[in-house]
Image (cartoon, rainbow, N blue to C red; front, side, top):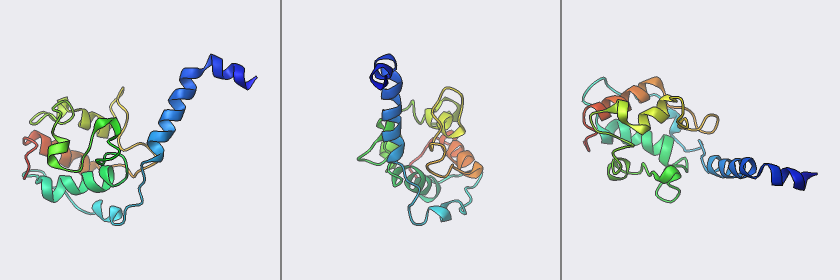
Amino acid sequence: MKFKLLKIYPALFLFLFIFSLIISGCKDTVAGNENIDKIIIPNSNVSFSKYIFPVFNLKCATSGCHDDGTRAGDLSLTSWANATIDPSIIFPGHPENSRLVWAIEGQPGVAPMPPIGFVRPLTPNQIQGIKTWIKEGAKNN
């Protein structure tokens, strides 16, 4: 019987297998991750090095998802250059056209980031801060 199910639902089993591999690599066990939620990102003049990089580093890269080795979704958030290499992911000046914003806001049709239940979600302030940084040109400052 179980072999018959494998023949009937191969795409489902493949999807579940790949999904479990992707999410098993993401961990929210990085020391200091709890402190990143205490940093308040300002409403303007958002510095990549002071505010955005620490969020990317602790919530996205060192969690084992968007580091240089794993590159989930072919995206590394370990540096400004890696994060901004694809303008469809971070569209400077236009957060509404940036796939990263769609993912962190959990917009329909886009996989929510960070994955639900595996890494603590970004705070509303962090989401707004990333959007502001992108709106201000996604500068390497």
